[in-house]
Length: 252
Image (tube, rainbow, N blue to C red; front, side, top):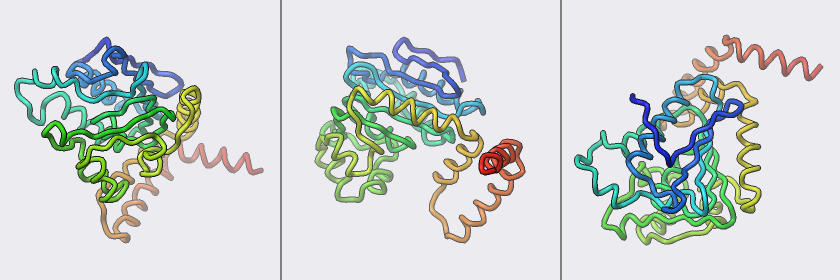
């Protein structure tokens, strides 16, 4: 894939963690095709780099993201599965590197559906979430018609997808859409703490565990067998043996 870049997406690698920040502050970080391409590129780069323990996605200003820039979206000449927004979603859904989101304000449309693909989600007390697809004559994306009912139940998903109701951070926590709500001035500290905790763990183990968690439903016996195969391979790896040795030494 080409090296896409965008002035509105900042990428930093710090201590084994890739920090992605949306910088289109004046437009509440509404996503354009170029921003999708840049995000896709950065996620693919992180996925290929085995030393990356996690990716953190945040927004600048008072918003995580207000969703798609509709004017830019309508400029897409051929809207099919190869279009930039869908390429981003396919990349997002296939990640094995852990993904953390910090929601500092508005999370509209894909600003909320993207969270369904994250592993850890932290929100400031001021965060607002909404899925106004039906109001625009559209339908939900990012597999949210599947993932949202699974996350919070059909009735709550209907509130968000059919009524398009806006919910606050505490309601999102109650719905199971975020892990924790913190004061705005504590959000960065929370993100840094969780990112550091992941970075301190064996990256291969993190990725293999996430990959297992994202597999389709299957009989319990089949999952035990699948886990056993991955477990055996992991046990024979240098990183696992080093981690086990270190744990045993600490116990002594």
